[in-house]
Image 1: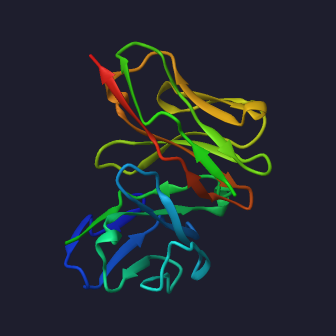
Image 2: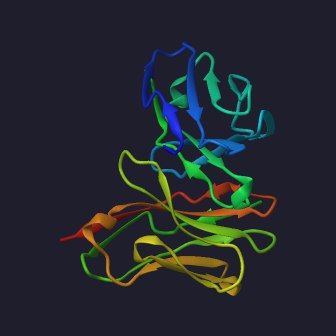
Length: 115
Length: 114
């Protein structure tokens, strides 16, 4: 098991462009979480999936953000019409009901810079 | 609403000295509590967690934390720090319905003086 994998690790984009990030959770982990971390702050919850169902979305997730997990395995997070305020580290995590969902395993994140 | 406060933004300690990082939480019931560490360029790593039972929990890398309900605190301690402990430390609180949906504090950056 290679842990939670995120791609790309870094992304620089121009304001107004769309970007998409991918997260591959630990296999057999049915819960998948997205967080955003800005400089000097702790991670902030964005949304989570149980299998393919998106169960909760934070108010931080504006209409420009959309997340999917079509087959209950990997997930994508898309940001449309990026703004400079979207610059942040986007973290993905997964957890397993076999472990009581008591521990989230985090990926190394995708650092987005909007110029 | 749940919240986590880490009052110290940055702490510097000498190598070999003891360490205590403070954490206070606000939650309506007994929460799940976590400490994570984040090194530069690395993902978040769980140091330890408290769900119930013994209020003194042991974690990895020689860290421990004590849950004090009366003070709504969950401070992290280590008797003797090593230079490799320099990192950002996050305290977090989780909901009982989904421990993995957690609310993080703003973090404490730990620097080690040689």
